[in-house]
Length: 71
Image (tube, rainbow, N blue to C red; front, side):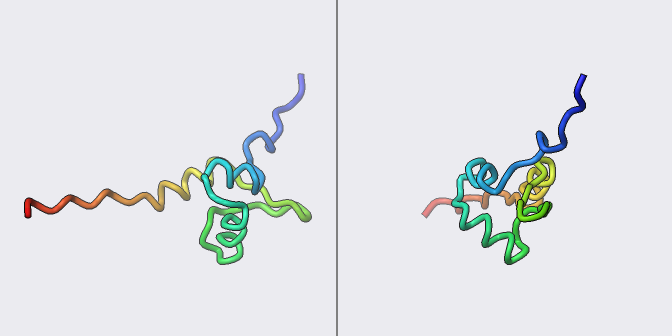
């Protein structure tokens, strides 16, 4: 039996962009500005742990503002 690969628990930049519904350029901009999810650099490859991305998303969750009362 083979061991599970830790890479099954990560996304590439392209996969993250697709999952997040943003462009690859946005993912790279977030990374360069250090405002995006934590990442792992392996040589010239960048990977994102799926659980770390989920935690980052939850940390940025905002409640919907309440609608004002009648006009």
